[in-house]
Amino acid sequence: MSKRSPSPTTRQYSAFQHAYAVFNSELFGDTLPDCLITMQRQAHCCGYFSAEQFTSPNGQATTDEIAINPQYLATHGVLHGLQTLVHEMVHLWQHHHGKPGRGRYHNAEWAAKMESIGLMPSSTGEPGGKRTGDRMSDYPIPGGRFEKVAEILLATAFHIPWVDRHLPGSGQAGTEEGETGDEEAAAKPKSKIKYTHACEQSGEANLWGKPDLAVACAHCGQRYEPAEAAP
Image (cartoon, rainbow, N blue to C red; front, side):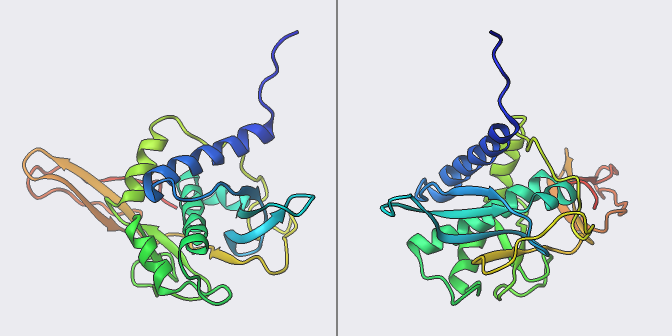
């Protein structure tokens, strides 16, 4: 009998479990307990965290939930999916090791932890947004810990096997409703992306600008190249 390939379910959830383990080790010092990672569609929400959402049939054990919206995996890409996962891992960290804000409020402790692992909290998902609030997004801090770990992970050919065919707002897929705990608001399409350049004279440098920006290094004349895909 020929050996069957892993099922779509196994491949999808194994990818997220592997990413969770890597980020737990590299960003949280392996201090986070395992949780149940699920795929959930919720309007205007990239993902959410729910504390002790699931229980064993005998009621003797509980586990937290981190939900990822598969629709945004298609529109925002794998890096943003990892960003969402880590955003919710910070909520999980705060539930077990800190003091969460009331309801869905992302408080100063949460914001400080986000910054410490290389994600800048922002109500708009871009520089200049508020650091705390009920509905929050974030963006990677250039050269920060999240960016470095994510780059190493993606260099291992890590990928998310399946993305939703029905995009957010298409009306072709249902949404989950009700109280879901701490959630990450879906950011607006990026108006700025990261550019990078490694100059032999001045070394490596990064800048942020519009997706169609054309700028050259003053030392060598070579162009800065996009470090991420344009939206």
